[in-house]
Length: 136
Ligand code: HEC
Image 1 (tube, helix red, strand yellow):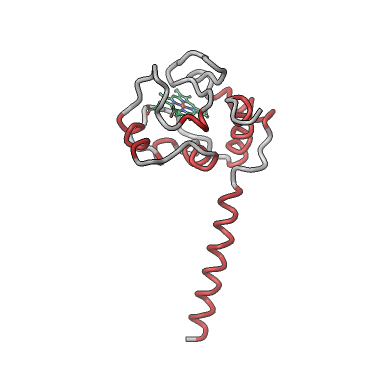
Image 2: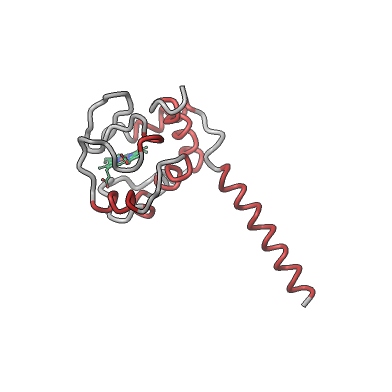
């Protein structure tokens, strides 16, 4: 019993630590490198204010404007369902979405396999923070 208790305590401790690591995952990106990573998105997205939609919606103000809220863009049912769940675009949800879009948002039209490398996603987020006007 004693050993069961201590392994439970160890598990709780491990969970606490992985939780902390998860929260910090998207921090520590390099915006200059992120601008290069964004080249993979550019065929489908612009980031500047009042930029045009391409295959995907313009991403200006993405971290404040909410999911699937660009007025002139026709989102997939999958993305609208995700928005209706009450989710928000934050560093955390973007970090997850960009790893494998279809895993977080089933039925999304964004035909992009994802960025497997954690560092690429961190760098990209650092870029998006400034390029989309979230942090000046
Ligand atoms: C092949 C085209 C394509 C590529 C490449 C692509 N996207 Fe998308 N993206 C889309 C489409 C289409 C949507 C709309 C998805 C939907 O309605 O399901 C979208 C949606 C999004 C959204 C949600 C927008 C909103 O208004 O809620 C974000 C954020 C996003 N993309 C970021 C990125 C980033 C960052 C990259 C590069 C790592 C990227 N996308 C690469 C096509 C693409």
